[in-house]
Amino acid sequence: MEERKKKRIAILGSTGSIGTQTLDVVRRHPDRYEVYAICAHRSVDLLIEQARAFHPEVVCIADESLYSTLRDALQDMPVKVWSGADAIAQMVTMPSIDVVVAAMVGYAGLRPTIEAIKAGKTIALANKETLVVAGEIICRLALEHHTPILPVDSEHSAIFQSLVGEDKNEIEKILLTASGGPFRTFTLDQMRSVTASDALKHPNWDMGAKITIDSASMMNKGFEVIEAKWLFGVPVEKIQVLVHPQSIVHSAVQFTDGAIKAQLGAPDMRLPIQYALSFPERLAADFPRADLFSLGSLTFEKPDLERFPNLRLAYEAMQRGGNMPCVLNAANEVVNLAFRQGRCGFLQMSDIISTTMAKADFIGKPTYEDYVATDAVARQIAEELI
Ligand code: MN
Image 1 (cartoon, rainbow, N blue to C red):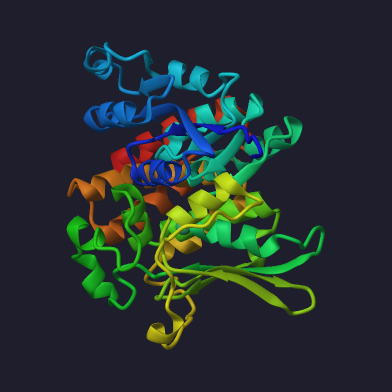
Image 2 (cartoon, rainbow, N blue to C red):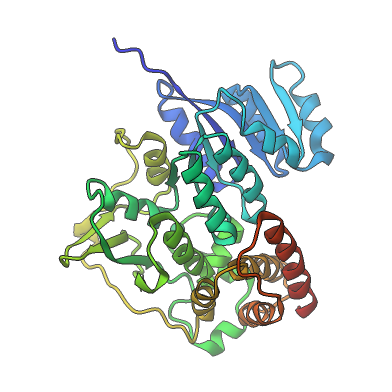
């Protein structure tokens, strides 16, 4: 029998939605993958459970106040227990690690992803905020260090899959699909009074709270336009968002001869996660199948920028460039949390992001330090506007 070296995986954000589904994929292919390191923000109980089930070499908790809880709970196991942002940044560079699944939420994922790229680790990228904030730096470093970045986001995985075998063939257009979220058919008046629990009822995808709110406000799709620009080197003018409520066509690429290639499937994140880990192979899996007969029809509509101004703000941030997408992200992280806590209305979120973009200082060619400073200032501006 052929001896295959197992891929050793580090998961940043192992207790979140992508993290737990990554562990499910690993559990299905114990001959292929091995969990080397797991890391969570503050879900310490689940992290302990995962450590006992997967026996990683390193377990790390970002919130340092939970370090002793984690250490005490795992003291009978031969495992390194670390905590804090510096430890996470160091963890991803460990020589034994082959793949880093970057599935932390928000801006916090930027630094460890940069460290992992510099260390030449293959990146399975779920943290889109990383590319929104600092796509230019990430792409430059990935080129410099010959680090592959494989998309985990379902739309970008679909685009990536559609590009297999196309080598240098030019992309005319990317067709980025969006479910439209729970408020797709709502009037502006109805949207004014929606609550966080209304927004957390996503029609098709089961995701974490932050991204589910971003989905409802379509900021998630705005971020994905920016993410696609960086991953596939296509200007945002050539990225068209299509509202496709069935979430079966996960996105498509149109080539210069008019051919459109798409990837379809049931909405289940385990498929793009597994593909990012197994590429260029496909591994057999019994994930749910899309039954086209029972679906009957697939529909597509133009997004409404009046009701979903976040999409317009994302294009605007990208067109202005520099640190503007970083401002967009920081303001969004603030209002997203405020909305979940009931401190900010649904439509107010876009107003605050827009005003923050107008107030923040523009930096045309930001360094990493500029991004860190921009993030802090934009958060402060947005917080004061609530
Ligand atoms: Mn997505």
